[in-house]
Length: 352
Ligand SMILES: [Zn+2]
Image 1 (cartoon, rainbow, N blue to C red):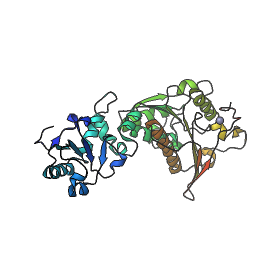
Image 2 (cartoon, rainbow, N blue to C red):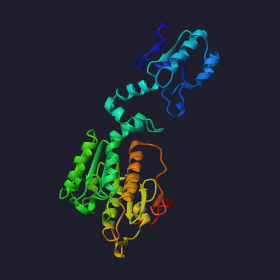
Image 3 (cartoon, protein in one colour):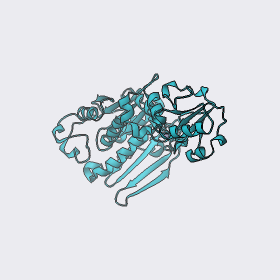
Image 4 (cartoon, helix red, strand yellow):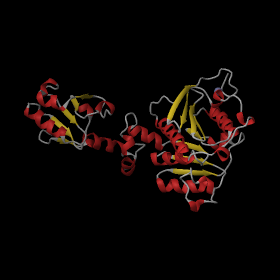
């Protein structure tokens, strides 16, 4: 730090060298860039600098892009605080430097691509790094899987596994926007992987052209941080539920029926499992599927997006309150409802 230069580059900052770090950004409480920083209103600082610092203090002033902090430092020096400097480029430059250096670094392109979610309160660079290191498995690349997969890929989930045994059918296209008309006849996982790669080449997509069963469930989801159930098949759901309990990971369940959809996030280590909610396989009853009752593509889009939203928050390590509720959506009334769901002590799958 020199006496004459008003600014210091982010790379040259050692927070311990300063007696006071003043953060004059708006919304700074949500995004502390230095743990030792004090939040100060820029106008109050300009009015009475010596209320916040002593004349002999070494002071660093931080704003968003390094302009207002420079003005503040000019004021501090005029007020008799000579060892004050402004962080060049502000918190933005510091954030960029931290993101692109260190062990789990992001490239400059990644920082730009994911800028709007990195800025989210509680998300930040850490959340983005967690996402880049995560593996999310999506079982089913249909009406729910297509929107879920799109948002996982664009959000920068490092590794996505997509599992589906089907080929693209003309009747899929109205609700499965990962596929184009030319993809009819192609295996879904192959067409999905190509489209996801085009959306975001940073993401590694593994395509598994298989049906999930009791026998292979644990193997196909091994190594996943989050599993999304985007099937419309009770046997597959129970198989995934058992595998997630055995491996100790979360499972995001959803289903859509006509104009209605539902969603629940399960993790048997902290709350109920799928079998706590549906103890008995309802497929023996007259359960109708989309091919019989029909489904609105926009509704699968909404519910599949909710699955992606939950998976991204869990994988990024964001604070959330997603466990222990069943969310119900009715498109005709434009209405969401929530019910609490509890762990069953005698649950066949997760009980003692
Ligand atoms: Zn259970």
